[in-house]
Length: 193
Length: 193
DNA sequence: AACGTACTACTACACGCACCGTGGTTTTTC
DNA sequence: GAAAAACCACGGTGCGTGTAGTAGTACGTT
Image (cartoon, protein in one colour):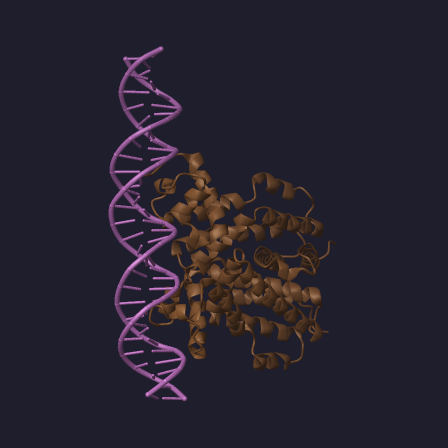
């Protein structure tokens, strides 16, 4: 019942993210998970006692997957904190979303599921609120142009843009997303002195 | 099978929005709809041939519910196009979201469901892209401070804020959403001359 | 090198649940 | 009184769950 095969557990959690993106939170069943991970039926039951904990663990795992690696953080800190660096970082974020569409879609599904499941909501609230403050602090303490309100506005606008990009990309064909990102940075981030 | 009782059909579609918000897109079944509308089981089957069209019709209906009424548009146009008017409009939008949480949550669920169902996606893409251009044009042609890019940035930031408010409100306790809205407007919308 | 243990993978089964669609009867409405 | 809608109950079905039982494998012991 409580298997400790870590690689397989991780594989299951990765598959869970794909299932979330492909079939929604309600579609994340043990059987669907078995199928997605290409494992015999009944396997997922051996690794997670019930759906609740499966969802919770998936919620925790998704952050380890989406969180920037230390290496990336280092890269990000290398250039001088200019408006141009901000622009690059935003395009970079957008590219990451495009590359790991399933991951970000799954997070969105989990957010909605958190509406119904308090434990999922609490897990996500904690993880995301630290992500937010980290993000804002990075901007402020790193000496990037504009203050805290600039950072918040940028964060929210990029969140909105990502949701649009993930769900209804065709509603924003002109101007395209890259152009919008440039405009966002120009509008929100003060020019370098 | 094909009932023409319009009030009841409308009641069913309104109930469908609640079901979407409460149980997700996958939870929107005929039976759940019957229960939510407090109607005997089997009723919804008489009004919609299958789940696909039920979802599509719900997607269409949701916009008639969320779209601003002509009266509201008139109210909005009354004051002079100042930064302060923009601020008021944004708080107004936020209040409407808070008041009709289910409606906006349902729209979010449908967006995600659109990821899997092309017909839902197309319906939403059309409806929302006109909503966006209307919104932007209203700002630009109404002579509000800032141009098109300001309007787009404002729209996206408010979208992001609404998603946060709907799904993880506790992640944003300081500063609270009203304060953030004020800051957003101050940052994004140029001061009145 | 042979053996034994402990853990894991696989398979099958029995049960329950929720849902669908419909057919027939009652009630309403015009 | 006739047509339409509402109600109710039923058969059938597919999906998911949890578990029990069997087979396989890796590793440590003697």
